[in-house]
Each structure stands twice: as structure tokens, then as C-alpha cells.
Image 1 (tube, rainbow, N blue to C red):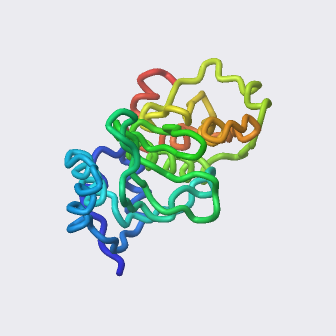
Image 2 (spheres, rainbow, N blue to C red):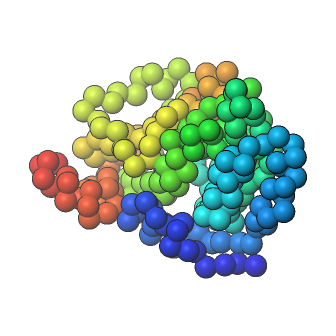
Amino acid sequence: MERHLSNAVLEGLTRRARSFVTGHGIRIDVPLIGRLAEQWLALGVPSVEIDRVKEYQERWGGLVLPPAPHYDGGPRCLDSDLLEGSPDEGWLYPAGTHRCAIPYSFMIGPGGEFGVYGYRWTPLHRTVEGWVESVALAHHASMWAQQVTRVTGDRVDDVALDGFEPVEEVKGMADTWWRGSDSLVALYTGEAECLSAPSSRTALIYSGLDRWGLYGESRGLDAAIRKGL
């Protein structure tokens, strides 16, 4: 059953991302943790970690967004389940189900990072909000760019970012976004790090953007005007 999006889902997002989520996202019913918590405690999972999963499920559980341009679209639906890890290594828990067969899982890290777990744990963004912002920005940039160029493997090293600034709202770690005078660049290195596969590194260059295309919200546009862009 589809449910309305709550204000909690939109909290902390930019205006651009809020517009994307409300315009293109839906919320479906997913199970809450409930009585599973007792089973997880019996398995040795600390209660504080179970509380993290409960909070995630209450805020993000059931959110369905359009596909991301990498990781074969990202999670089909944000949804969590039993944690993995230990007190020494830290605890990870599922972030959502994938859309197709891929050699890794989407997970939330010990510090709330959104990432992928295959051969190794690789954080993509510092927060779930960062992942949502990145999907929203990709959708926005693809709508307004005059040209989109895809670069992979070693050629990613040739992408010049002189004069670009990081897009802070995506809270990038392995994956980052960069804003120039008339273009946006998305660098996706998480899959390469997770699978030890350098050829999987990818850059998407969205070029021919005006101020609205670069920012997509008045706050960013006002900042650009103050900088004289």
C-alpha cells in the first residue's frame, strides 16, 4: 500500500531534493522492527544498534525513488533488516533492496554512512541524506544539461576539476560531485573501491548549464550571484 511522505523524510534536505522526493518519490508499507528486536538482542546485537535500525526504518523505510545513474540504479526501496558486524569491527545494517543482480549490498555504516558492501565496506556518502541529494542532483542535472559525457576507468584521471568546488550537500566520500562555472561533474568511485575494480570508476559530466541548472534552488542561485558567477 502506498503511503504519503512524512515531513521527517524531507528534514535536512535542500529545496531541490525536497522537490525531487515529493514529486517523484512514493512511500510503500514495509515491516517495522517490532518484535524482531528481541530476537536480535538474543543474537548479541547491542540495543543501541537496534535503535539505529528502528530510527532508520521509521524515517526512510518504504521510500522509493527513481533510479540513480550508477550502481544499477541504487536501492529499489529503502528498507532495513538484521545488522551485520561486531563490537570490534562496527555494525552495518541494510539500506534497501537492489533493483537487479549486483555483487554488493547497500548498507548503512557505523557512523550513519550510506555505502556498498561487497569485498569490503565502502562508504559513498556521510549520510543517507547525502545519497538522496546525489540522486536528486543527477535527475536535475540530466534535465538541464545540454550534453552529458560519460568517462570510465583510467580516463577519469583526465577529468580536469580546476576551478570546480565540491557540492557539499551530497556529503561525498567515495562518490563526490563538483560544480564549475557551467557544468557539474559526478565522480563514482565506490564500486571500484568495493570490488577492487579500477575500471569501474565513472565520471558523468553535465555541461552547458545555466545558473538554475547548476544549483536548482534559489539559495544556491543567490550564493552564485554574490560570488559573481
